[in-house]
Length: 186
Image 1 (cartoon, rainbow, N blue to C red):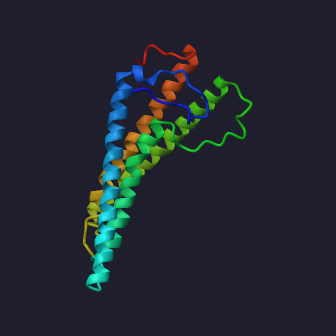
Image 2 (spheres, rainbow, N blue to C red):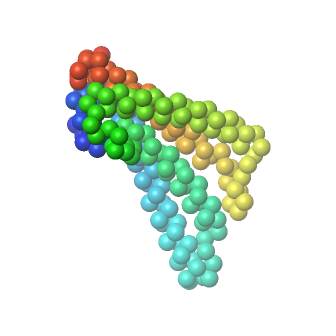
Image 3 (cartoon, rainbow, N blue to C red):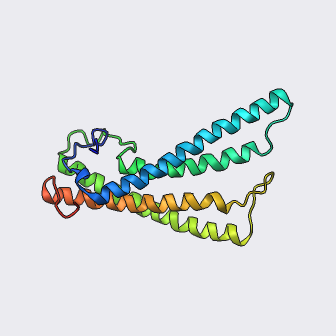
């Protein structure tokens, strides 16, 4: 599978598809994204049932807003690693239009490192939040769903995002040092 980096703010010569490790990361990120898409499809189904319940029986599905809030949050978290792995984040090119390719790679590398640090910080804080949710048995109001249950895939996804950010920074650093095709990452 060839990765298209045309959506990146530079045209990378780095051939990510030579790396079995990259393929492993891409497979896991795709799996998480498919899970996120499945959750979104379930949300559509829940909304349809709730709307039909309002029309037919005069009452919505009990706790539909709770389910939608929880599922939307989890789905968003599940898409983040794939977005980062495919350089799918928004890039403002107003300041980088005149820069050379190597300078753009350096800026991307710095951005990936900063994103990795922020994502890791949030991941650690989310782990503490998860522990508190379990400790205090926090639940949703109507359905009494333990809040920590949907938090687990969100924490995992964010930890994976942190790892992918570090990997992308290393890959861009290797590309910079080897003029396009690092051998060590293959």
